[in-house]
Image (cartoon, rainbow, N blue to C red; front, top):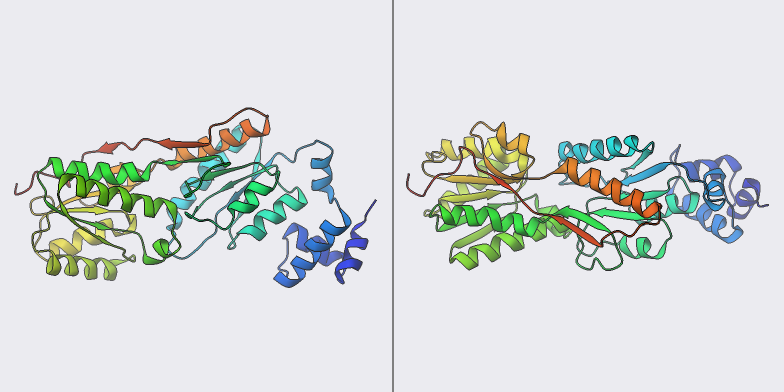
Length: 335
């Protein structure tokens, strides 16, 4: 049987370094970790967790891969994580959280060492570099997000394209003819993050279908960003009367910024959003919104993963239909 000392000798490191590289309990350089993982594969080493998996015994741990990248809104990510943990605990499973820029390497480490039985992947990009690894490994996975090519994967998400369409449909129904999308931070679009890109597709498609003039504006967060984008919209689109917001930290700052410029909400400007329902309901002017159902998505992801572990068939893609709740921020144009 291959021992940890054999791996250490092959990788040219100490046994303790091998242990830390496999467990993640202490920081190890990327180069050293790669040498250790290569030695593990070459020698066929099975640490305790991987040994359990090879013997058909599970760790009863699910991994949650949430790379903490710029532009991510941490409170919403936390809501997803809490829902995953709660659903996992209800089925007697623990959750291993992977946050440190975890891409292929982090998921590969979990697969190689058997630290978790399966993995839930968040912040999915349209052409996500993690997908080839997920398709090639035996580690069961579920994506909270829908990539451009979901074949061979199990995905669950809100139908963000339909959510963008629903917000525009509501504004069009109220008579608004010039609309704008205040979107996620620019880096989210640069990464081609799936949910943000799909919402833009829905927004622009619905605006074209209704014959509306429309523009899309990625935006940072904070009062300064809100003031800048509000001033730009008022300057460039004097006929603007409808705004869709896909950037929940901006709701109150945007309301303040527009009102500072003399625009009443909803008297002069109707505001809709795609965000968690409590965020929309607690805004200074309660905002008409499509809810992001983080609790339902996290719970569904866990249930799909447990079904896969049991050998049951699961659907390839599950898209939850959007639901719009009317609140005080929207009114017919000119009222």
